[in-house]
Image 1 (cartoon, rainbow over the protein chains, first blue to last red):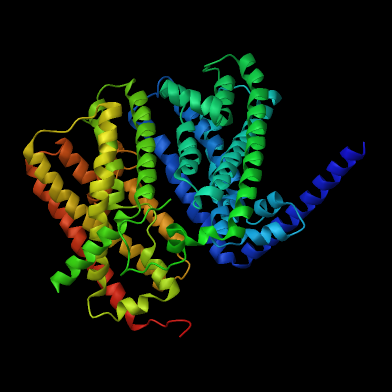
Image 2 (cartoon, chains in turn orange, blue; image 1 turned 90 degrees about the vertical axis):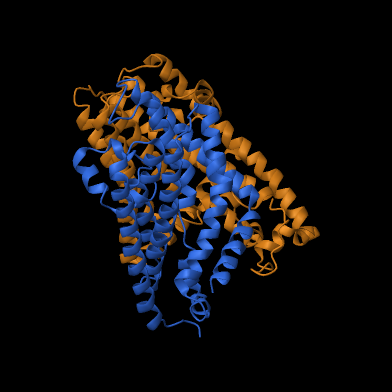
Length: 308
Length: 264
């Protein structure tokens, strides 16, 4: 009983801290109103152009392997909302690479609050509201195009749930990229491929891809649960029947949770390595560290430096 | 003076040689996106065999060509010049005894040659392996392609310079950079191939400068333009190149006269 109370207390204090940090970020960004509005409008147009791409394909081609404009637009819209949410909320995790590079992570470790909440709440990009708005408008357009679809409260719930799971999975992938940062200093391109590439891929039905890609994005990085499975179950252009889709929902939740635990375990391993390495000071002699500190100028670049 | 610019280009090329792992990672990204778009194209073509004179193979070649050329002509986010403006280093660049624009031009040419050799060719090779896209054997197409690609790369440099020079007036111009980059990519056929645009949009798009960036070289290599219109298209590309270069040079001169460097 006392354990549960303790856990609840920690969760409560962490949430309060997180909300405080977010409020700080929002107020700070709202100071530069013109800049913020320009940013939001720009990202809205950028996301909008990408959505127009999807629509433009259907000018010349009637269907995409049996799927029509409205269904693809719904897929793209849902992906956009999930991605926008993940970019907005998980912005602190994106910045993790620069925190490590500047050596500020030691400060994070020294504070008497949880590391995860600090990193998570270190940034909140209001400008991603542009993509979110575009996603919502795209979904609205898609639903207008799919006007013969019957909506029940269960389907609405599934839609909201799949947006949330999509966002959750993207944030988890970002977390994985941030964890790998402990070893590679830079976030690897792999994270970009999984997030941007995953979003691009899942804006179209999963069935058009190669079996290997399908299995990867279904079981290993289950982004497909963010868009394809729920939409196909709902609009009855089914890969699986609706029943199986509902069964799979707990599987996707389990994937996300287990993925989260894997990343936490990875992070603790990485943390212990970080502490031991930085205390020994051996990192400072490697070429890559010197490169980042700017000791190499335009004139004396050795061409055989290894960048790891 | 030409020796100097050639040396600058060679140094830029050698500097890029160091980033081997970053290049490999970028190559994987290019290949992944090429694959995703290829699958979408294949799925679209299941409904109709030929569209606007392009069949599946042609469109796949187009897609992989654009993916291969993207880093040569129009890298996605290029803010080198903008960063020197923000940090004030641009003052030292402006005081050098060489022309500011041609200095940056040669640096970018060096980078472009690197990306041509180490990104464009491997990307297209991956496309050939994965999707069986081919290469034409017509030597005329290759010559036309080489000319159009060279001009397109120079056009790309001028455009990158243009949206970075705006930072002389707006310090935090990151949003402008993203928007300018995306608009250029859209109208050059990187999102939807230009031949697939609806007729009215296509008519507008061919007169924009972005047409000459990647769409024109790709179309020339695929042999989709007949001989008569070749010189007209190249002329249009050169026209935009001259216009953009003049615009950029005049903006730079205007800005250099009024540069106030913060922080002494």
